[in-house]
Image: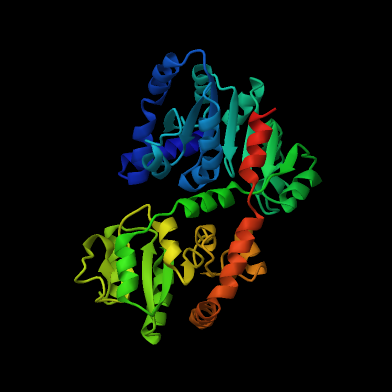
Length: 404
């Protein structure tokens, strides 16, 4: 672990942007925490830790419920990644947002001495040995929520016993599925409960609060009668499939939301679509209907954009894994994604429900997209029903943690 943090400092020194942001963000964490804790010396502190934005979104419904119902509690929210911290550093429903100090034994001890949390809540995949051992040693109730476990994870390998023993530091592990529960129990880890996934509650909350987006409404109206594909968190492989499909189907328009909007990726998109798109930040009443592709070159809009989709394509499935499928499904939208989805319980659930299709090349993509557009009502209803069937994790976990 020390080697990892040393290498992180090294790559930061040589200019790696994300590593540099992380190292810089760490510099005065303890000073900030001391100052903050001195302003609330007698208050109970509940500490939530998320790796990045996705994990934060899973904790968010519980944090907001706690913030609104327990005025006697102060909420500390920490992030590991710069992207998570930068996007949520001004989050209003936490009393303090900061980086998690690098997970060394010394830092973990110092962190707990300053913060004095009454409880620690980790989200999904966060297993920092130094912090878990320090929390356990200090008898601080520690939980993980929305966790998911698979046989190929390090915990369950012949050489993974030491890492598996870390799971005994948790007071309770709230897992997403019965499969995770049974896997843990095979290895003698029994302080586990199936609580579901709070992401379902979060996406439903977003959908219920979604407001119209005038530019996108204008784009849809100007292309009246054409089916709308919303492609979210796309990468180059995804965009090539979409561009080819558009060339062959004149009755379809595309709202493209790339995973990254840096200069290099925007250049790739320009080449893939031969420049035939309108950028969201440059859209006007005069040009919004001139192209069949509206490219979203700003952040934070995707979850609301899905409300305009006849079918949603979720990017990342030709890489390390698909992005959030539930943000689209909650609107009653059929979902399509690439082949790398097997780590995602909700993706498998959507396929089993008849609401989603996985593709592995252009031919399967074209077939799946055509069927989804034609069967929008049927597949969309299956998507909505699946989301509804999975609601309730927030209430369950909140009651377990804070209503004893």
